[in-house]
Image 1 (cartoon, rainbow, N blue to C red):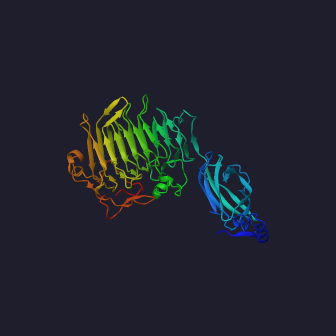
Image 2 (cartoon, rainbow, N blue to C red):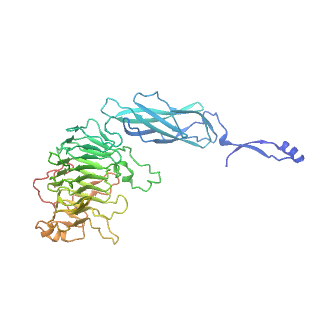
Image 3 (tube, rainbow, N blue to C red):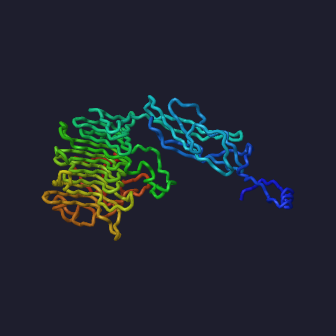
Length: 514
């Protein structure tokens, strides 16, 4: 119930009654509309500091927000809400107050117990430095002779950008090398032409905008297997920490998906595409590379010209891909796809899929599909079909698949409460010579033949696999950072593998393989 300041008009009212005129009992003004000049009636803010995650120069930030409160019963006259610092040579902060885009707003009333929303964004200009640099400022809140401040802290980083006008794609220079000096930002799909090589040095960070991909029609050399090499990182362009989980659209997201770093479909894919007329043997390498937030982690297309494509993916992490971690179309036909010591985790539909035949070898790999990132998943994590539908017709070829010393697990169950099948192998005539080998691995599948039929599924060996036993990762359910190392005492995968040639001496943490 608001308080009122009232003026008694008893005498006037009585006189008007006697005259038969209108009756006025009270003339009242709500207290929250009465402006106080009390120096103790000040403004407060919902935060002390507004922090922006690292902002690429010239790109602009997301919009941050905070509230300014008048917690007094009476109204206050706000002298000003605005930027306190002098104009910066490298950054421009901008405020939106009461819907007005400005740097300062003066002389307005804020009713008692009311508030005003302040939005803040920043654009940082390019500089000559190669390291992250701080851009500070503050927002001053002044009323009744008292000034308070909300600190603004933004960090800028220069980058190497790839962009092009509408209708065009940026082309990467032949023989170019991306280094860790500055991050690489692909604002549109960037192309490595046929007969060209792109080298990506260890420690390089690559950020891709929505729908942008890296399209390689020549050859890709990415990362290094040296024990002290830093990983190459592919990420979406968003670098802020979280979705706003107060937004009803995102309120039900699990904690790991509320974090942009773990949110799928923020960019396209690394596309390794066989190309006509190339004088290079198609030999692509992804070593010690961490790929997140994509629609497809690595897309391998060998369908058009069948020249003998070879792809090696080793010591890599591929996580939070919307469709699949690795997706092939006749990939490895006449050559081969090697996946060694690699983790594919938390993808939307598949971990690994190939259509149209080819040669694939997966060794010391972990395909962890625990947790359906967008509701229930009813697709198999590992999927090979030797047929592929093309615009020109249906293409079929043999599959030669080897899966050894590896783990395929989700822990997901079907409607009956049974562990769901995570392997599907399709052989379509006339490709009758497809060969599938599963050895010394933990597999989630209800089909016992993967362990008992050594002739068709074990390269002459039977009983080397473990079916439907939890591999006991240390923490596969961690909300933000998964730990897929094995429980040293209880995991059925311990000492299940056998020595391979060539050997894989170290795991992804550079610890000796056990």
